[in-house]
Image (tube, rainbow, N blue to C red; front, side):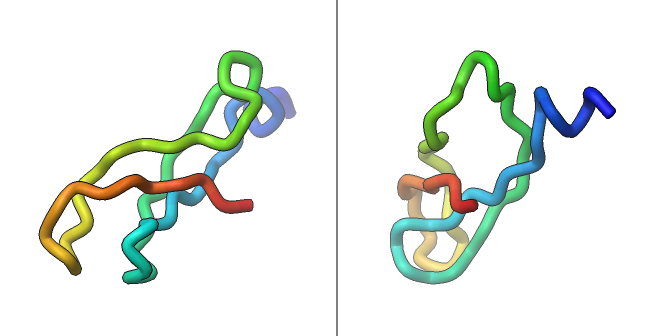
Length: 54
């Protein structure tokens, strides 16, 4: 199916070392490298970078 090829589901893990994750989809054609987003980590109660893990 084309749905899983172009927009795969990825896990974003916190760089603060808390183990907190977000789950999202990304467009592989527009963003072929690993995604990094700055989001809120409720464990440390601040915004930190979340990196894509495979």
